[in-house]
Image (cartoon, rainbow, N blue to C red):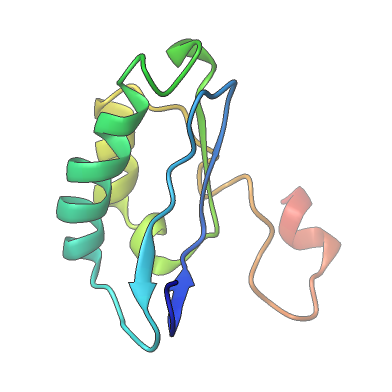
Length: 106
């Protein structure tokens, strides 16, 4: 049993055979570099490219929770360079608690 652990918001929408969970210690903070180099490069992207994990890799969509390490241009470019479709930064609404329609329409 895992105690004092939390799951970060990495979501992958696709016809899958297996699920990938990324767990971090409670109160642990990840830098953008750690997320890019360890989480994505060593874990998530190889998982998505393994046919044992996905039914159709063309149907993979990486959905994130818009944390700064995922919003970073370096991360967005890494996903694009590895042909991982994702919900880009423009898909999610603003972070303001008082969302204004004009923020979404332009």
